[in-house]
Length: 119
Image 1 (cartoon, one colour):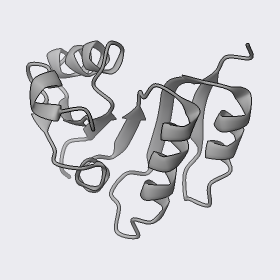
Image 2 (cartoon, one colour; image 1 turned 60 degrees about the horizontal axis):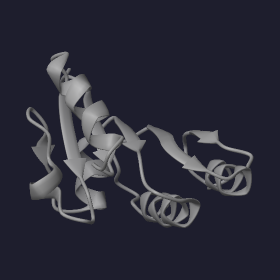
Image 3 (cartoon, rainbow, N blue to C red; image 1 turned 180 degrees about the vertical axis):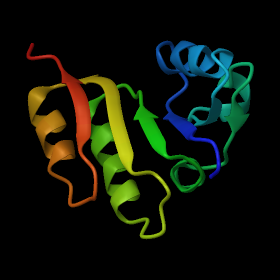
Image 4 (cartoon, rainbow, N blue to C red; image 1 turned 90 degrees about the vertical axis):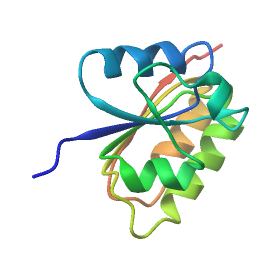
């Protein structure tokens, strides 16, 4: 059995430190950021070239992006990957309750868990 791999989509102010902490704890972490993975990649995290690369390489994927629109776009890309390895998606983004519920309703074999700010 291969070791669990954790993926991070979004390596900004929140995602980068969280990915770094998981890697520092000894776990395999793959990360991608649309704004520039190479410039944002924390130590110990393996860079990926796309969202698909992270989802295909990871058992669990964390999403940490700026808003609900981006979260939903990523959720749709994950749904479209029939051969994905990821079975759990955790949305860490601070999005409104509507976007969080929309993401959780995507027709996939896992639950999208999110933090929804109601303001």
